[in-house]
Length: 160
Image (cartoon, rainbow, N blue to C red):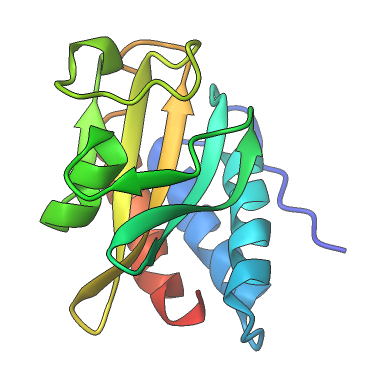
């Protein structure tokens, strides 16, 4: 059993360093990408406060397809270039959105979501998935969150 409990006063920098280390330890030696994404969604949920959705969309035949997640039921397929996830997948760039309702073409899978962070998972120069985090709080995510999830994505890209 893994216990990744952090003190409430942990800094964002330390929280994300520990998240990346835990993600590395949790997926080490496991080759099943779906199992790893499921554990990673749960890990993110336990490490990152104020979320209402945390999970993965996988790149399948040129579109994003829902992967393991924690939260309310979600959109199953997202075309490239549509919504925050589709934009991140198409551009290969992290999307940090303070107010999803102001994002052109936002796809509202959960009406409670107010802000979103989507980080592409890149392997061999190609986007293979995105990590999607939603919060019911506007402007929940900042640069420290983006850098932290990007660091984790880089460490686990070969395992999903």
